[in-house]
Length: 113
Length: 111
Image 1: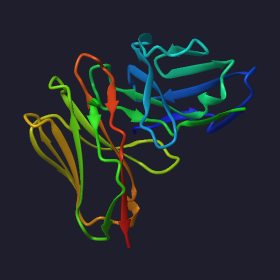
Image 2: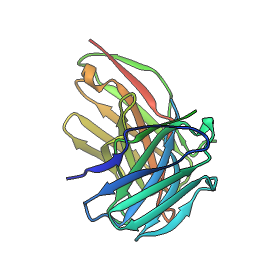
Image 3: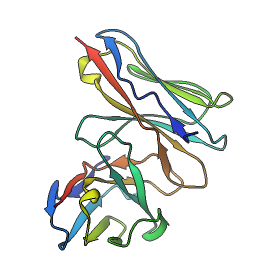
C-alpha cells in the first residue's frame, strides 16, 4: 500500500481566512513533504519533515506554517494568503529521508479569492 | 542552465509506437532518478526509479541512465492513448534529501 491521503480535495478561501490542509500516511514513512504546483509547472518543494522535525524550509513565506503532530500526519496552516498562492498543494512521503522514492497524495486544489 | 531539463513537447506518437522521453541534469553528484506520470489536474504517479547506469525494464516502460553523459530517458513501448500525460523527470542530488523536478514533457498518443 502506497497511499497518501489529503483533505480537503478543494478549498476556496478569502485573503483574511485561516484554513488548514491535512495529509496522512500509514506506511510507516518517516519523511514527509509539502509541494506547491502551479498550472503547467513542476512541483516546487516547500517543506521537508524528517522524523517529525522540520529539516528543509525552502524560504516559504510565513503565511504558510507547517506542522507535524506525529509520524503519520502533516498539516499546512494557511493565513492571510494572496491570490497568487492559488495552486495545487501536494503532500508526499518517503520511507526515510535517505530513501528517495516519494509517493504523492492526490493534492488539494486551493483557490484564494 | 536548469538543474533538470526536459523538452516541454508536446511529443506526439501514434498508438502502438515507442515514445522516447529524455532528461538531462547538471549535478554530477546526483544519485537517484525518477520518472513520474501526471495526468491533467491529478498528482504525480511514480512510474520508474533508476540508480545505476544501464537499463531498467518494468512492463512497457524502460528507464535508461547514463551518468557520464548526465542523461536519463524513459521509453514507453506499445504506446496507448491512456499514456497521454505529462512525464516529470526528478533527480535527487544526494545529501539534499529532496527531489528536483524537470518542467515535464507532455506526451500525446494518437489513436
